Image 1 (cartoon, rainbow, N blue to C red):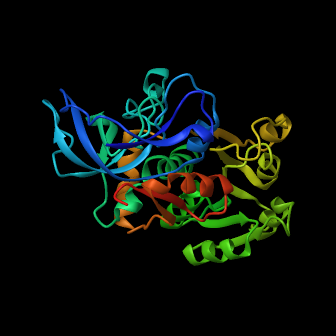
Image 2: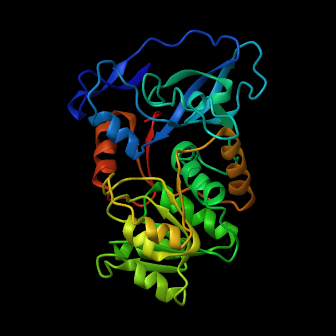
Length: 334
């Protein structure tokens, strides 16, 4: 079977398509998956560029069909269409070191045509979604759900600020609309802002034209500020996010695309009672709750482009460029 592997010592130049032996039959509590498609995340590009002493199989997101189940499996059955889950051990509740162990996309990853996983590492998905759309759910969608619904407790009528038009931000836009929130989205591209508007964004801000976009957020909210900010930029955007956040508001930090280190203005956080919450993907329970909302509101994940497995290098290049709206998918049947 075919697989994408990052070979030692790492680096994009050591990213290649290889042949691997087919897996054995699933054991107790395990399922055998036939992968249909996967989507890329920023983490996959980071993994490809990171030095490694052992082979790495990228991708945490996968749409698959259950080919066979081992003894004791009761969560899924052969023939079910499922998504892989980022944290196989985080079923519910608060994250712990034990629940965080063994995320998909490392020594074990979804960039293979067949894969054996514990039954807790997969979950059923809404029927109305295509295979490509299912392949976008495991990381970006759950991260957006965790940030917006769990961490920030967004409610109908509140204002939510979203940064950029990558996978997490677009999912958060769709979820916020389903919740009845008012949304403000930022981007440097007028064309992408037009697409965000078509998806239901209430207001759009071009941050190249308005670099101090927090002032525009304040103007649009009659000086109050945003109840929730989904922070994906990190060092380059955190200060503006703090200035844009209302008293008692929440900032869910899900990414560091513009830098990982930034001085924190503690008096601002204290004086405005701002909640800063770090977010890392989510649990199986969050995935199930998210899928119910996707099904109820007939939400359609946004796929930017689809690449054949043999064109995986082009998919990585597209992901690295940042010139996308929604998710980049690799189809294993092509």
